[in-house]
Image 1 (cartoon, helix red, strand yellow):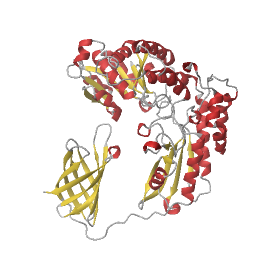
Image 2 (cartoon, helix red, strand yellow):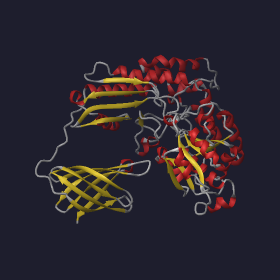
Image 3 (cartoon, rainbow, N blue to C red):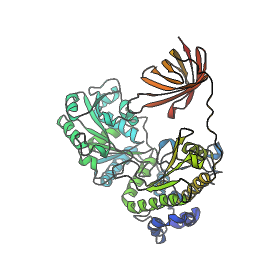
Image 4 (tube, rainbow, N blue to C red):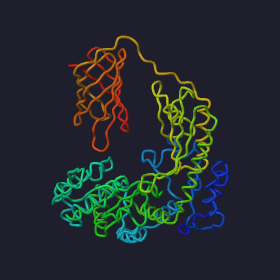
Length: 548
């Protein structure tokens, strides 16, 4: 009888203390009633249209921030104030999604039959001809690309990625981004263009697909999806739109503009499984995309989505159509305003709650920006970020301001995947540190004659596995250092300073769609220098250099 169990409103409220959590937030009540009201009359075993539940109401409980399944393996959970960023585990799945995933785990099915049924359901819910559940938007991008290259031709599928007749994908330069790896991993040549005229020149019989990153900024320009799709259709080239972090609107604006395929993240706005994605569009192309992935032994075999994730995604899309989005926005705006109000009375501090960005943009959530003069308050934005990340409970947010030259500081909070209890914790913690911050000293700048660093340097970077050989060609004017960085593949300029024997250099390697900032720090010892380089999300490693 386990498969018949449905978590009821009464069970959820009893296990999670929703009412007390909401009441604890004080000023957040406006907007919350619109969401909590449907709970009063909800019968056990039902979830009403328009009813919005937060992660305070999840039916499974496991301790608290200090004792849970993560802390037991040495991992510190966090309060996420930044939004649906994959690196900090994305969004929070809806209770209906958790329920669907649990129920799905109780049975076995033939995946081909399940995906056929899901395709029809996604079509009804999205207004497209068909839909496919994938393991995220990047996977949807890959499967869409392969579908446009090989269709369901078994021989062409098995020959990938080495043999393909259509081996190019056209992309507007403004659409290049780190997530177009889903295209690049298929082994195609990326052909960039900057105007409709250039697209007409570069599109050819080798063109498998056009990739466009959804951005309303281009909607009323010659580079709109509508204009570019019309050109692609003249040549029979399918159009794919990456709409990962945008909302699943009905009717679908991208399909109306001429897109053949559109991909969305399941684990962002829709609050489905974090590792899920939704691909919708033309029925034959969607079916070809599924054909190219698991459980079939084709190019996309590695992108396997489980029955639990697929059914969880369906629940998320169904709830997207039922959720009261206006009530959600009011609730989130109330939360944001309560944080802003908490900061009143602090010297030099300005706190502003701002509404969600316009429809069509990413991560549409109200938020809060708190700004201050660190000369008055005594803590910079980056010091605040570090303090909260190291605190208990752990809080992760974004901040600006560094000591001693950039003391105008701020932190930003994205509220829509937080809970009422977390809103209060974050507001109180920030207020406490702005009112009575720890003592921070300005960084010590070494004095004395700056070391000589002008010249050509052979640089070795010691990665966790492997080494990188680069070359710095540096010029020096007192403490100021400029020059060129010649990497193994990418070349750029660099700049920085040397004080006594301590050097700091910054460069930005021109990686297409995702420039990589490098911060080199170290010490100079005659014709040698060494230290560490911070490579953004890729971590910190050691480097050393010898002057020619």
